[in-house]
Length: 180
Image 1 (cartoon, one colour):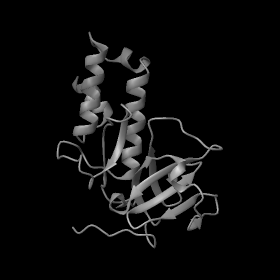
Image 2 (tube, rainbow, N blue to C red):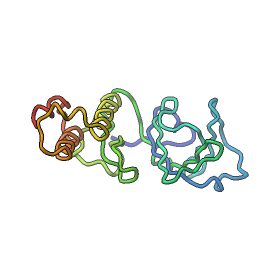
Image 3 (cartoon, helix red, strand yellow):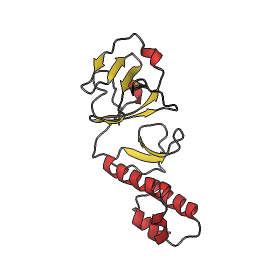
Image 4 (cartoon, rainbow, N blue to C red):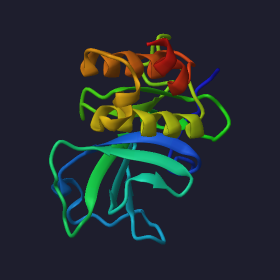
């Protein structure tokens, strides 16, 4: 399968991308090439696009995440940069996404199958199925009441088993719980 080439004319149509947080000084005194109806500002370069926005995650028909190690805001807005080569196609029907623990945030997040970190150990899912598993992972990692119904001696061992099962197999959470 050939990768689509994204650029300023098509990057905003059904794409997935992880933007990297950058300093506002980069676009200081520059006029945006485009301002969306919601107020997001876009600055195009030959390498990629800078985006200033108050909202990240789902943006219109896109899934754009901002990777930031600091809470750098300017009037509630954050600035991110993404290379054109960092954009990937997105839709609701293809199995495009896998889940793994992000080395950056230390949380379970979804990633596109065309990213370099993808290996065959991870199960590919549709967007909807990925969202469902991410909700389950959040419950497993942040709550404990679900565990009282599963015989176990070590909660962390149980969590590890369920998490690995959810991200590397097509087994459902109830199946994994019964198998433990």
